[in-house]
Image 1 (cartoon, rainbow, N blue to C red):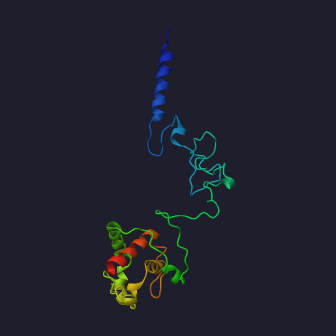
Image 2: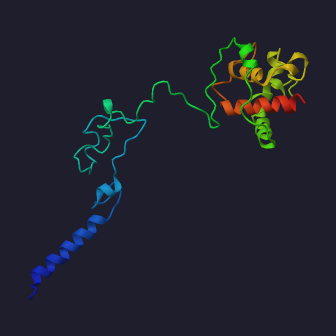
Image 3: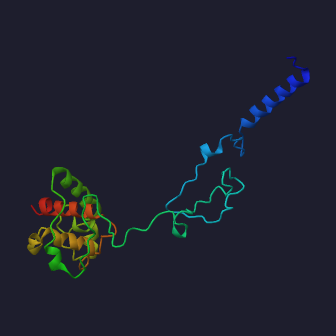
Length: 207
């Protein structure tokens, strides 16, 4: 088979164009020969873009929709995540249910037992959490002499009087909902961390 000069030049030109199209510079990302390898259609759980033309200028999708369209057409209302089964409640890492007792139910709180088993590690973690969240008011030793406590006054001395008789559940309840001058910390400290603080208060502060 005889190859003419023109055919040879055309082949060289084609290869040159192909190689040149692979290069990228500035805002030009280069040509993608297998776009679906790079741009998979993912359903983001926390976003939902129903506009099928959103990002059309960038899209290489085989379905012809915009690059950013991610509404799940297989779920009701185009949702990207299903709603939980009715009456489903979240559990903590150790399997405990959310704390439901009301603010005024101190008697019920006193009956609640600490679901976290005490250990040297738990007490160490509880001590760190106590220093982070509690010592500013109650003081490093729990005597109510923290820097903030000195300013606002009336902070409980955890080593004194009736405070020594409080149950784990009562202490947890007060950390969660607050009492008197103490504000609620349930939204700031997770359930597990609150129980670890309780262990530290009962076993280290009040020992």
